[in-house]
Image (cartoon, rainbow, N blue to C red; front, side, top):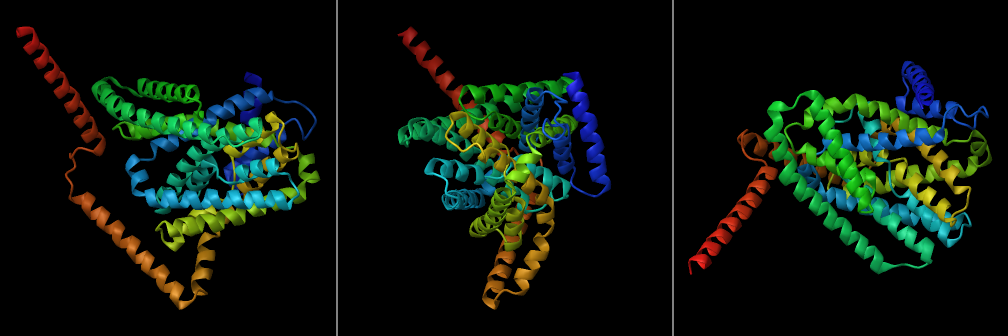
Length: 450
């Protein structure tokens, strides 16, 4: 295992350094490193794929945990309209487009359904990594984009249940799906309530005793505990890691935990992208190059169109809508999981998996360049738009700017020590519990006196 880790780290480090010198995205260097150490290129098994997959899965958890730390619950509610309309447009549009592509390619109904599910959602890990490397983390569109990605991950869990039911029973089990959705909603509600009531209060009590070492160990323990809880409930482990990140984001230690997690996140995220590269067989790229290119074009065009339209209909400016759509031009982790599910159940064509993985790598490779093209494309469309459309774009820009200004002014007028929404919720619940306890004791004493 140490030998495998050495090969991965030294290869990834050298290739990433080369890509950095060439001013290329480091993520692409990790994927290329995976191809180099993989079992396909030179015909030798330099590392054990099982070990790499394990580390890569851990990397996904840490990345999503850190993404949760950077996100606030109030941002999810504030961007609720954009998130709901955006995710409905993107997922719904890509499902229809993916199914149509499958039927156009002469795939049967089952293969077309699975293909549609593989193409309908972007990669949270890749999108946030690309945004971070591009220095866009503080831009206005990121909040809405992150909210959409959260809902996409939740939808992915539901899709996995639905696809399993369709594949195994060859029928649509609506009751089973509704039960799973109900359990998911109930589980998320319980996690939220328990997390908001207990964890911030606990960390506030022990804060004087928390050095960096204890804090990072405690945070990782909470993260992994939520991961196990999610798996036991039948949901994605990645969803559990993200939820715990969001819970800890409501504490005063959020930025400190985020700072401590950064090196660990970077190491395991690199291993994850190396593991993706190791799945690429250069021979399959040659054999299916036309299908790979076709699928990649469908992903890029579909995500740009549906992403831009969904965010625009959700109330964002046209430029921010395009930025979101242009950053969603890839597929990732859940697409691999769905592809693996189809292969495991034996209901999909064996050629689909390498095509999907290669298309994911190709779209990941192109993502930074497509994101850089957002502003030139926006300027071109704006300059060639009709006067009526220009007026709508300008009006939306002014409306969003006024709303943002009003929100900032409102926040500035609030007292710095004013209780947060989370504090108010905890206080209300504690007050309710204490009041009920006092009443119960009073009634009990009255009955005993009688």
